[in-house]
Image (tube, rainbow, N blue to C red; front, side, top):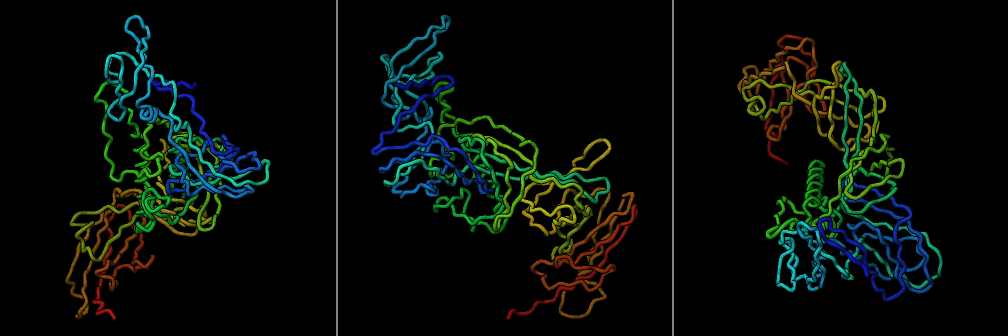
Length: 546
């Protein structure tokens, strides 16, 4: 008979076999496993298994599946016979569930006597077990576990038959030809995530940089995937909320207006998973005498626990998080329909509650345009950014994602941290958030605010040298004060909001261009000097809509 002990370390052993109504074949573990991780906090797990099937109808069971799998998503291929039924059984053999399922059962209570260290044992019955504590009934009456002041442990002589040490997925197969089968089991499992981050190292000229991309893989489940082939998918899938039978734990795709809002939801969902994992222990009462339950912190959007997965489970066995560099090699990118796929070039272990990192991008000497920029809206008329105070322009890095400029790779969204090379060592100069960028797409990063550059604004809402018509006019004079030792490029951008969508520039001391539809001035500010930009804006009444 199996024995299981709960003490200071709570060791659990053995598990009963389930009685089967028909012959059962159990596949204990996969021969090989592949995991494709999406940024939407789940993964597609594909396992290859070898089984020997009899000719009669049989129940085929798979041990070692990820406990957060979505049963409806499971697909078994290459069986050579029809499926009749599918079941997912998982009530985890863990201290909390073992205690709750043992209410009314007799156990052995062991106590270490002070001084002599002698172990005293007595029979006891579990009268109650919940988040507030464990109550035992002994020959002396009712008492609470861990309230005697002595080291205690419980010994279970039997384990309730519906508890399992690991999850099991089973399918019922119709009769067919007997023989060995190599089959494929695929399913979606929640609790996996990946993200990307970048390190950009600027050269002394500020005209090129070395760009390194790191990918972080996270397994928040209790399943360990050994020697798995790992793929990562960058792209935006259309997903439904779990409450609607979908796969998304943070809301349906259609609930979000843009990519930024969707990414924020992913990050919020990941943070909630982290908090759920860190706080999923209702075994706080095992640490001392009643009252021993400590309320968990409140989260804004509690994780939904509709399948008994990792979100809100009750066993609370958080393993140590391990950060492992994957040998520093580059993941190979591939195009996959409307998505980008990154493949880890060798099998790797992705253990339970583990974080891993790998380099997926190494691009030396990427050409970049470093300049200063000011964005100004005609609707503001100096009331927001300027507001009577000098403004420091933003330090910008401009890229074209092209092979000729040193890039030419799809770039998944992530944080970019920028460093300057300096004789005394690398200097951190700022960071910016990067959205998904396809090949050929230009993009910019704001990394800091300028020093030794200050811009002042004067506004004239009734200029003299304008036509007498029904339009609105405003003249702007920007004074650029530079204390820098060299000339620096400065870019002004004049935008028009909804209230002045029909605006135009009619006078300027410098010729503007159009950049993505925005009026733009680009010029070099002389060193240790004051430069100016002046222009007049005309905003016409759009008239009644037709």
